[in-house]
Every structure is written in structure tokens, then in C-alpha cells.
Image 1: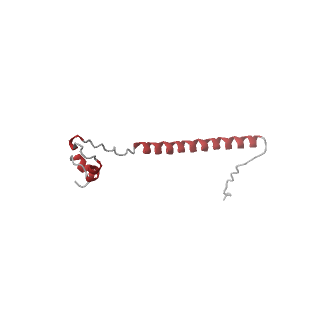
Image 2: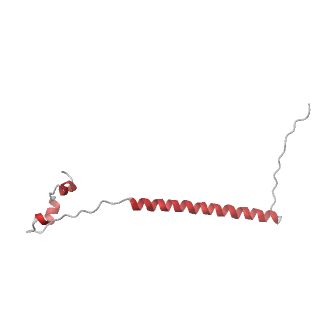
Image 3: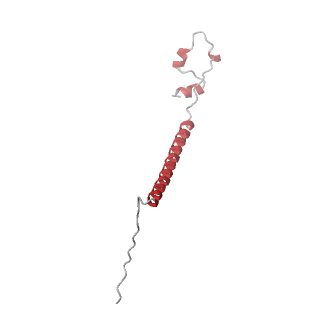
Length: 96
């Protein structure tokens, strides 16, 4: 029993706690309350929610930018302000 938790579980009162008990107190009636161990569920869930939300926001922004760019190209090409052409040159072999 080296840890204070082991001493408390075994029913022994560690020396530092024993000094805090007022003199004349019946030690058989002393109840030692320990703080519950920390739960990491909340911070982990919060981190996952923040990461998921950030990814969702980035996807929405990318989609909106794509739609706006497509609409801008369509409007500019329809008004004659922008034109683009796809040239496909085919290499044909000259007859033998």
C-alpha cells in the first residue's frame, strides 16, 4: 500500500488526512470522500463535433465556390465577354 488511494480503500487514513481531522473526533465515524476520476468523454466528443463541423463548412464553401464559378463562366461566355475553344488536332498518316 504505497498510494493514498490504496490506503483509503483498505480503511487506513493517510497521515496527511489524519492531521486534518480535528482532535477528539471518533475515527470510526469519519467518511473520506474522494473526487471521481476525470471523464474524457466530453472533450473527445467536443473535438469530434468541431472537426466534423469544420469539414462540413469547408465542403459547403467549396461547393458554393464551384457553383458561383460555373455560373460566372456561363454568364460571361453567353454575353461574349469570355470565350474558350477546345481544339483537337488529329494526326492522320499520309497514305503509302
